[in-house]
Image (cartoon, rainbow, N blue to C red):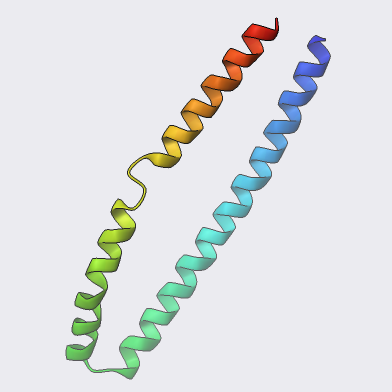
Length: 91
């Protein structure tokens, strides 16, 4: 029984590590692409136009900042709590 639990925990750890690495690579690639795009855009338009472009992006950046409101964290917490309760009830 104990071996099964450890094997499952190790498998979950490997899956989590692999997913975390893939997420990191995706975020890094996204940041690099956005930086290159900003540099290219800055070279193609005047400073005044780039300033207007930056101001126009403020509402979308604010929406991105506040879109979550902790919902993902709450889902993770309560899912883990419910799974733990279910495991305790089975034993």
